[in-house]
Length: 293
Image (tube, rainbow, N blue to C red; front, side, top):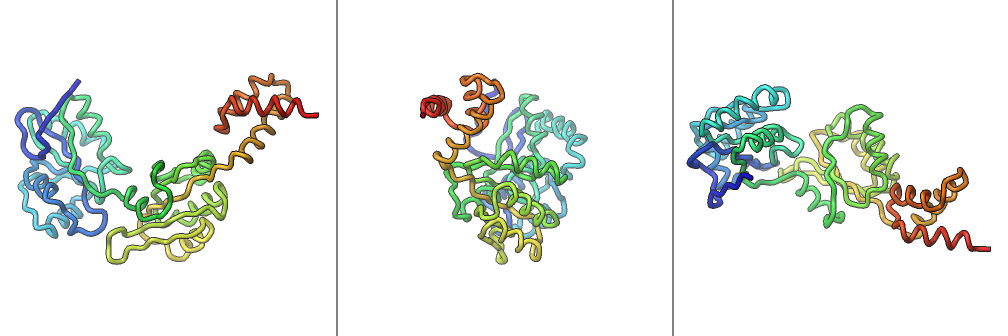
C-alpha cells in the first residue's frame, strides 16, 4: 500500500516525482487559484491537452514557468504516458492540464493516473471547477443524488440503446454533448424519457455569455436545432418514482412469466431484479392477487 503525505502543498517534493492533476477554469480565465499558479510555476513538465490554450491561460494569469510544455491528448495518450512515467520516476513534478476543468473527467489523464499508481508514484491534485458539478448546482434539479454519463456513443443506435437503459434511472443525470449532435441527442432522450421530462442545457458556464436554458426535453430539442454551439453540459431529471404504477407494471410482468410456465418465486425474482421493486413486496402482492376472487 502506498501512503503519501505532503502537508497539503503542491510543489517540489523529495524522492520520487509527483503527478499533479490541475483543475483549470471552465470559462473565466481569471479564476486561477494561488495553488494552481504555484503548481504551474514549480512544475518540471506540464502535459497539456492543448498547448496553445495552456500558454494563453498562463499569459492571462501572468504565470511564469520554466516547465517543458508537452501535448497530452486522446490521440497521443498511449504513446506519451510511458515517457511521462519515466520522468516521474526520475523525480520530476508533472502537471496535467486539460482545456477546462479536472483532468480524467471525460478528458485526458485517466491513463496516466492509473500508470502512476501502478508504478507506486504519488498522485495529487489542485482542486478546481468542473462543468459537471457547476451545471448540476445551477440546474435547479435535485442534486442530492446524481449520475454522470459524460459523452454517450456517437453512433445513433448505440446512443439510443444507452438512453433506453437509463429510462428507469431515478437520479438526476449529467451528460456532455457536442453541438452538431445536440439536437439528435435531445430527440433520442425525449423518446427514451418522455417529451415532458425536465432538462437544463448549460454552455459557456462562468463566462459573460453564459447560457442556462431550462425546459422540457422537447423544448430543448427545438431550441438546440436552431441555436446549438459549443460543447454543452446537459442535466436531465431522473424518473419520478410512482410506487403504485411500478407495482402494477411489475405484477403484470409476473403474470406474463407465470403464464409462460415460470414458477411464482422465480418470476418474482426476475421481475424484481429488472424493475427495482422490492422482491418481498412484489411476492406478497402477487400472492394477494392470486387469492382475489
